[in-house]
Length: 209
Image (cartoon, rainbow, N blue to C red; front, side):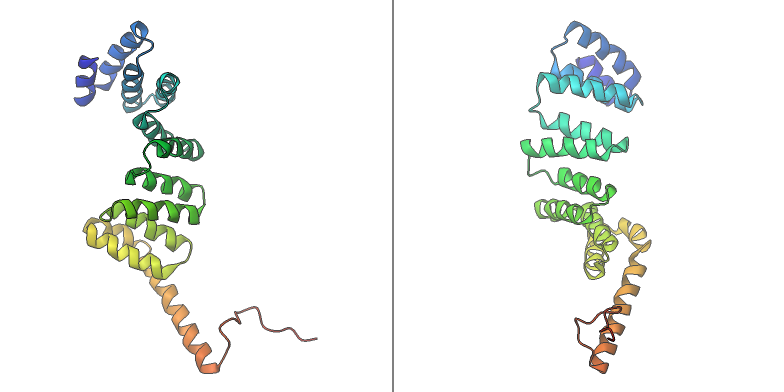
């Protein structure tokens, strides 16, 4: 086991797989053996086998945060967002105050088209870790997709303050958010000038009998 872990740390994943396969054959009830085998398999590109190894570990002990979390990460990489979310929820039952976990849950919801749930998860992440630049960026992007442009711009600017390297990613969409905000402001000013009630939206004009 120690030799295999050293190989994982050195990036020698295929060699670690060989050692760990032998280890779990001899120690089939070892959670650590199956867990590390899953990591080595995932890193060496054997995703389906890695999932089975994670499941073997969970069959022995399903109360270990790291197993659920890393299985969730792998399923996310495999584009199984529902499966990934299920793992993250199980992990949250064990460690609800992990900011990265909530950020990852937000990513799942976002990929599944559930924008408001994504925003709620990102909000939980930044509440737990106020300097979490990536989560602030993800929250900004989720607000942008939901066309809540004021919040999108505000959180994007905060994300850049925390991590200037995010500016390039923000630039891909922030101009659209700002343009939509400007358009809404022009429309608001026009309606005030014309005395149009705020609740009367385009397309909702009273019909003619």
